[in-house]
Image (cartoon, rainbow, N blue to C red):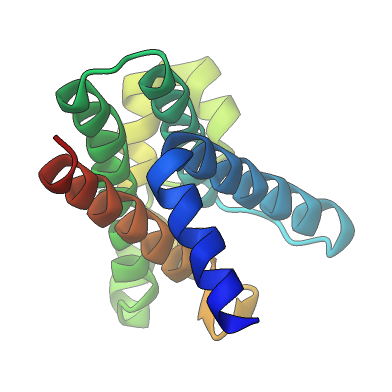
Amino acid sequence: MYKKVLVFIKKIYQDYFEIGIAFSGFLIILLAVAMDKYLFLQACPLCILTRYVFGLVILAAFFSILTNNKYVKFILIGSSSLIGLLVTSRQIYIQNMSIEDIAKLSGCSMPFNIQVEYFGIVEAVTKTLAGGPSCAEDGWRFIFNFAEWGFVFFLIYFFTSVHRFIKIP
């Protein structure tokens, strides 16, 4: 059984890498939305921004399917994964701040979509990345919290895209 699972994972990695990334990113977004709806968890603006970055990874994977150029594939998936690493590492940093430092943050004062309406996308992302007390909440945890799981998945996406870039001719 163990060998069959490894063979299956290896086949997906070799033959369906971009589809696998897009599918896993879609499942992560779907899981996060379902947990918001059914477990009544309120996502902070940084969590919402992380979902958008997962969406960016999905788009990058779909565009990578359309090209045969390994440089374009690496740039698309690698750069979107790197953006995800930066966003989730910022949230992890905020979650590990002291209470005094958290009280000084004022970036996430309103939901992300309302920030986009009032300030525009660039200012909304800037304010969201500045963080706020709602972004410091740990919320739900299964071994890791949402931000840490996001970091793990973006790290996997990044290093697998680097590995494919180096190994595949």
